[in-house]
Every structure is written in structure tokens, then in C-alpha cells.
Image (cartoon, rainbow, N blue to C red):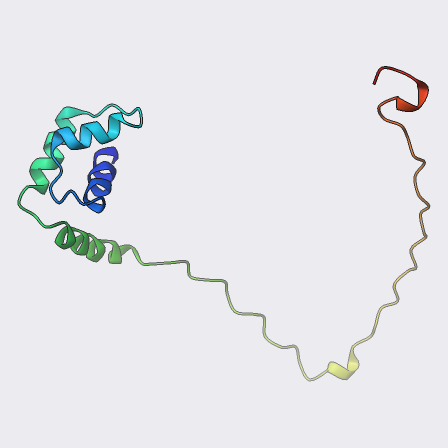
Amino acid sequence: MKHVAAYLLLVLGGNKSPSAADVTEALSSVGIEADSDALNRFLSEMEGKELEEILEAGKGMLAKFGGGGGGGGGGGGGGGDDAAAEVEEEKPEEEEIGDAPVVDMFGAGDGGDY
């Protein structure tokens, strides 16, 4: 993938047909070592082909996988017509809790070093 990514970046940068040396130089500029066997195999497969055609063919292959998430399921159906029969539950009142005492976590109030 690193060779493909470097190749695509070089093409986007204006180099219509990057060589092995171009790809190797691009990878080494960011500290990545190129695998010459894999790079030469990739470049031989790309030889004489237009990038746009390859990308279009790849897009067709990806269509087999489907796209995007299916989204969530629909909401639940409505209950019956018994809307008037709903009973409101009484909620118990919560007790108010007072503020917690302030604590000096760093010991500044006692003349310490912290």
C-alpha cells in the first residue's frame, strides 16, 4: 500500500508516470524504506495504463461490497388508542444536598511548600 499511496501522491503532484526512483525518493523523504521487488511488480502492472481507468475499474469492484451503513431501524410503532388511559407516576422528591466542605488539596493554607 505504501507504494500505491506514494505513486498516487506523485501523480496528484503532476508526475504523470512516476518511476521507481521517484516513488523510492518520495517514501524515503518521510523515513519509509521501499521494497524494490514489490515496487517493480506494482510499476510493471501500471505500465501503459491510465490511472483514471484503473480507478474507475476499482470503483466498480468496490460496488460489490455495498456502501455506507444501513442506518438504524425504524422507530417503534404507536401503542393503542389508549392515550387517555396513561397514568402519570408520582416522582419522589429528591433531598437537597448541601455543598461539600472546601478542602485545600495542595496545602497552600498551612504554609507548606506546595
